[in-house]
Amino acid sequence: MDGVTPSLSLLVRRLVRGTPEAVFKAWTEPEQVMQWWGPVNVHCAECTIELRVGGGYRIANRLPDDSIIWITGEFLRVEPPHLIEYTWRRGLETEADRQRNERVTVRFSERANRTEVTVAHTRIADQSDYESHQFGWTGCLDGLAGYLDYA
Image (cartoon, rainbow, N blue to C red):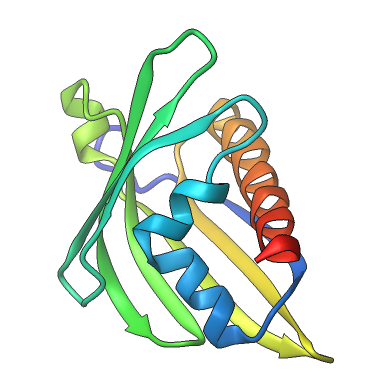
């Protein structure tokens, strides 16, 4: 990336059941995250969340071949129940992975007895990562909606 901040940005929205408070908790409590996180055929094998500015998170994505990709980062803003912002790193396998500067901002907005969840993922490195994130976030929001339908 040669010191240049990647510039691709992704925005994904979904209207889900529940109040912003309930949906915020589903997004930030590890026991709940493990029930819905991940796109089709990806399961959350482990999740830790230290929900405070400067706190970290780790999510283990178990893929269909049983391999695990770790998603890690640090919370930059925590404004319950309406907003969280955090850094996003996937893998941490190479120096380039460690230098990525991706950001995720999630907003929870009340909309007629439901909550609109808006995920903005910015500073994406390239088109391949963009497509991967689009698939992943769409799947995560589908999983969240399904989980909240039965919660």
